Length: 424
Image (cartoon, rainbow, N blue to C red; front, side, top):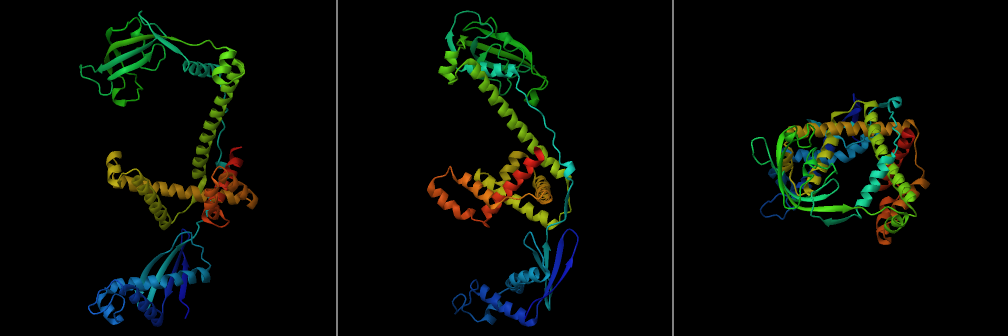
């Protein structure tokens, strides 16, 4: 006998379906549920799963038996509702028992919500990146420093010299500053690697000499608790070294950097720096694109959809923590977050991720973006090419058309195509 189902379409793309079962259908499912549960019931004189059903029923909580009965009925109820009423759920439906007599189960399906994307709002500015000659020269100097020579000297330190220091710092009350003590710290005078005034204070010192000098941490110092604070440094000079850079000639460029000339070396550096700037700009524009798409997408998300995405995020997060050998409680203590903070953060992320995913789907649909079978085969081949033959054979079935990995790669390629179009 077919299941009697009726549906009601609600807001936020919800479809509420009521499945009403006859006495015969319920009795049959109850019998199957008893059989399934009997293996977990111990009845004296009978092996597990072999006791008469009426004895098993006496030992099982009625609520538990009802749940198992409904669980037995659900697969067919879902198939029937989806087929008969042409429902297209995007997550598994939720089920609840409305009445026991006749047994009535309410299934809540969530279909893909209506999405609109204001494509004219998904715009990203382009910043032309240039490499200045001073940047090329600084990079060249940095490369040359890798080939520098150093020799100990017995004279007062000057700009360009390298000193080996023991350092400690005291605050305005003469107390040691945590983290300021350093042993055998190399410092090149004029490198501007330390706070303003520190390197200048080293000029004139010789090996074995000590010096104390007051300074003030910058207002924008990376350690907030030290910003703008007075400090007295005490240094002991353990060595002073004269630094000599090699002469940059065509022969040196060819020997050390495999460049035909100094000019060719500069050109290579300029090209590499430009490529790096372009990559950084591309990453910035991609991030800005996703932010713009999120803002331009309008969608009314069902609570059940957000909850499903939320649970997925929590599972992924817990798995990540486990790989790091950390529990959720340890993470919250370390990050000074509460369970409430984590819940709020994850729910916002779930909402944003859903909105972005649905917005991207709509944009791909609106722009009629597609990836051909030929393009997919080429992408799979390029992905497999660096792998060993045994690994390629192992992965090949996973990337057969229609498989999960194939569809994920296809989605990735469509996203890449729509971004190429939007960011050109």
